[in-house]
Length: 489
Image 1: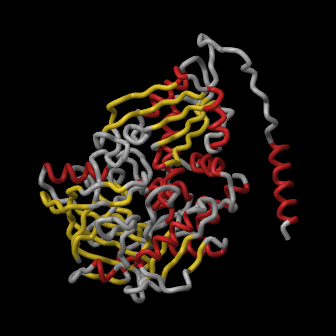
Image 2: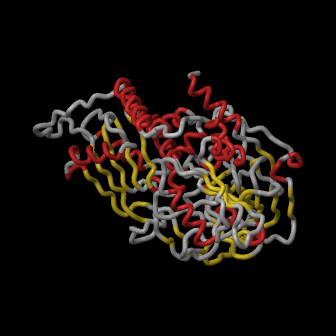
Image 3: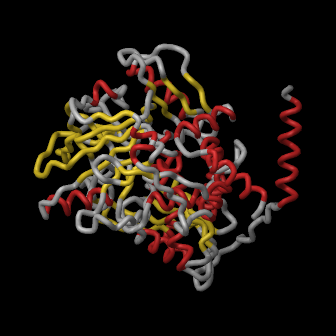
């Protein structure tokens, strides 16, 4: 085990909850408490947009003086910058995104996950129990995330559900992030689609008229929040992946309605799916940067609530990028696509699907023969995530860093011909793509910006300048940065 791995594991051991992570961020200067009283709207929204503009170093922000919500606490921006992600992984502030990607890829395992069980009566999340007279509007500092949202939204909950036909299968127990709109003190809508695991569970429960219970977890372990938004296999456990990534325990307990939940979370809202009932939901400012329309969404009724004393409500700003949504799920969208491709194509070097949940992605690959990169691209479109999300796909050579847009633009400029562009029309797509003529259908665009190889015509003046690279250049860069830092004193 190298020194960095040892540091990462030591950090992971210190982070068992959201509160632990906030303490760690504070020690790094990455967590602040807003000093003034704020209006839920527009103050919180504006502050989070300003923090999110710095995707490299923006801090998490706690609001504990929210007008109209005395005594309530809310935090956002927990995953709002790559420095926060680096801190979670045990890396220094300012670690390059590419390095964080390879670190996550190296941890991509569910082998021997550390998921200790805590009895419900000993779990911090059950410190306070509510079993009647539920009122979400009293309990949480709710507000519209964007100005034209159709109501208040909970945007960063981790929702637990079980396969109605295989409820004892731990792997098929899904933990996902789905937007939630309260419609009354004890009812809310939850938006999912059949391609998502939660959508499959709802569809199966309603078709066969069997109950579906869920647990809405708020204020979660930072690794759980990342993996709840990660596209993994249907029978793969988000809990197992999160614990595997951390290399440290994530404690579980049982909710009041029998689901596995985080023992050290801030709050859990237990609810049951109401078959056949729909409420109008939306509009909602979504991650593509546009408002999704009004739709009829499934309804859930609250059956119980547990929370820690003085709980922290965690929410997120979502809208036109860059936002915390992009930082939260970007690397964990890239890693599973890479994992699938690397098994079949060892030539794949890296996957950058940071942009709007992979609506635009960049894959670097060692070209084997003419047309090879296009074949890899087609396989990427057949991955679980690529099926509907990989809309624009750019293929680059292994000597191009897909996380460095200057290098990607160079490849597009000098290595792309008209014949290197393919458009696949009338394909499955996401419902909320603002460019789609028909919601749920769209195109896949492949741009092959890799080096041309025989039997393709090569052309003239193709000898590429070999830019100096390697450890010597990295060391010189560090010397220059140190000199700059000294000069600023």
